[in-house]
Image (cartoon, rainbow, N blue to C red; front, top):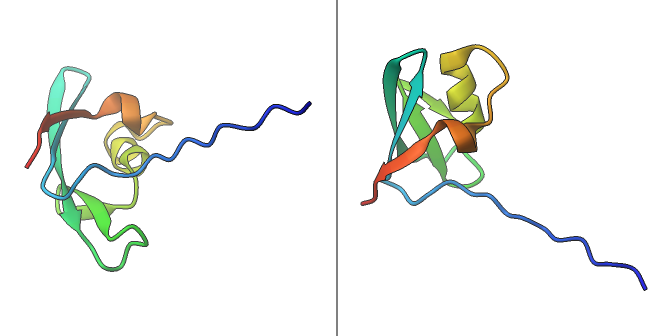
Length: 78
């Protein structure tokens, strides 16, 4: 009997959620915002730019491969 594959859906937190991260001793913050251009209807806004995923936003800071789900911490929910 075949074992069914487990599907994990990772979507951005709700709009208005504040994210914080730290890299090389410097703290960074971002916020989940509404964005109709994104398929999910949400984006991460950091430093005036919008990113499709938590990983893309984290990599913009670290400039290296980074797991965005580990980099960002949810610091405030709306």
